[in-house]
Length: 209
Image: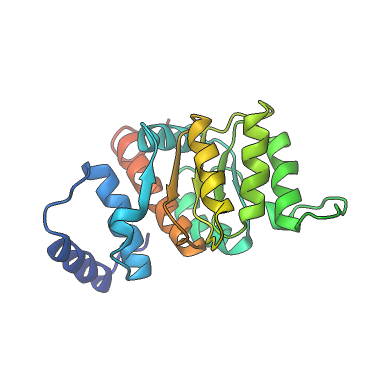
């Protein structure tokens, strides 16, 4: 992220409010980024990290894995930081040219098209639950094996939790949000935080990978 004095003051305020973090330092860095972006301290208890999610996600970014996002807002939200660091290829599902599919949104069908094209990509879904459902189905059938997944679409009905549970069962490294909260803003905050952590581990301290 582009740091400024206001961000520094805001992060210091978050640290004072939270006190001693209840999670590991890397996970806390993601939590505080999300709180900074949303001004919602509830995310301290809502973020879910699968086993070794951050280390595997950082390694995938450093390896220049292709990134697939669901909507343009998420692409725009991470592109400056991405270009300044690892410059991974990035594609947007809702802007992918596909043939019309009855019963599918553009983001849904575009996500499936790109997933089949890049089966080991990093997938980031911040808005479209249908796109996440399609992605999880491809994972369950063994058609794709993502390097990492960020999934934070807002969802007011029970199917959202069911889809996230299937993602956990698939043993894919991922970060999600418990319950119905979530947004593109949350996904972008997670992605940018992970980019900065990956750069500390693989980029600025150790040279280009």
